[in-house]
Image 1: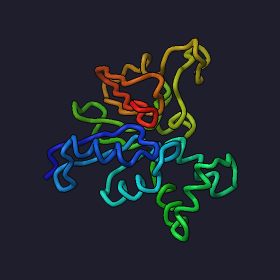
Image 2: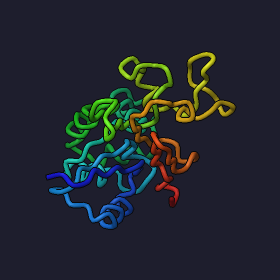
Image 3: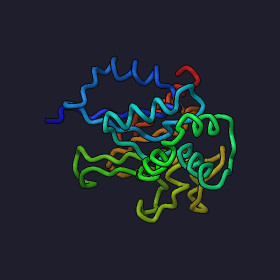
Length: 199
């Protein structure tokens, strides 16, 4: 029987910090459900270790922009970075397995009906106000920060954060924006604490 549902922000390859967080939360796989908001990899010292742990625990994760970039790197060699090269080498002959696993991650996880009090939506970056979730482009779900309501498109630093314009009652749990800090609102929780930067 599930007693708790836990959500974890952007880990970015910080395995030691993730293990510490799970210990602090007294996470028990048989009792707790575990959701990640994406960006499991890149920047930190042990991306493969994070992937292995998340997979081993049977946790759920949505696709983050760093997973998208890594998949693009594997397929096309685009956005070559030392971190991606290192991760691919560490994966060795298991690279195909991890590529398939990362490709299987959804852009969002929706639980419950929108009008239910305990329903929630997990997405990496956010949702575009006024655009139905099913019609949202992947780049919005994985990269959105601010929203320009007049032109109905992503905004710049002069525009409000997307969640300032979000008015639905369904809880949204997201990450992606470390500079924005932890966000705690009635209907929105932002979990990117900047772990890879010491947060």
